[in-house]
Length: 96
Image 1 (spheres, rainbow, N blue to C red):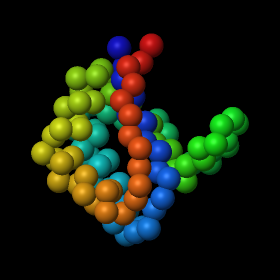
Image 2 (image 1 turned 60 degrees about the vertical axis):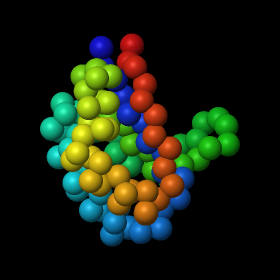
Image 3 (image 1 turned 90 degrees about the vertical axis):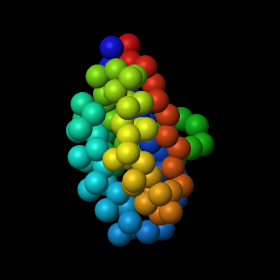
């Protein structure tokens, strides 16, 4: 059953660091069987109060693959790029 990592960026202040993070994360995700289904793009708030700057959705084959990506040495090496350049909420959701 697929699993999804959903990231919502609420603040971003270092575009160069985020570009580097995105470049390196593309390979890290692919190396764990994941693929980006949403990566930025236009979005519209339909209800509620949260309106992030950017939304990213990554699909993995299952929860184990998503967790393997999250805890991999490859991804650990770039987490601080994102953390130092943005405020982001990230959740892992089991698919239907």
